[in-house]
Length: 165
Ligand code: 4NP
Image (cartoon, rainbow, N blue to C red):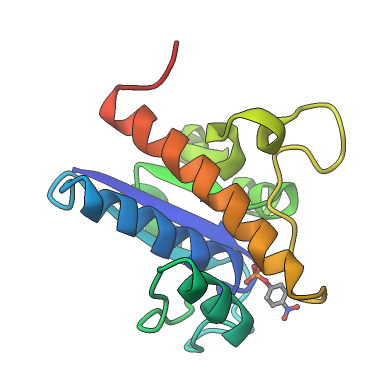
């Protein structure tokens, strides 16, 4: 069994979107007994809240259900219990690196390191990050979904051993 944790700042926009998208792919491939996922935020500001209605609506338009998800903050036990802790951006990754003991740092990665194409470009300030859509317009939530779908496919290929070399 592999346990994957998706992490953003508030756990109401990006990481619950990743949880819903990735879980649907796991279910479609009947891998629920091999792969489990959850999401959390580095901040506790929105703990207990349902996801942002804009994220829920954008996800629903593509057939993903986020309605049962509730925000929670990252816990130190997460670093032991999860096999991979995948941050949506570099700030969240830096915060996780500060929280996790050195024995767990190898579990921490940027989620978009599993994406291909433009979603995984190195060398510019936006490469490998899922941009925070909270203060932007509705297009931001569709962009999050595009990136999350891409990286979810790559992550599933990685976990099932069918990734391109
Ligand atoms: P998330 O988005 O980290 O993708 O859940 C945000 C949610 C809330 C805030 C910022 C980003 N906020 O500042 O309250």
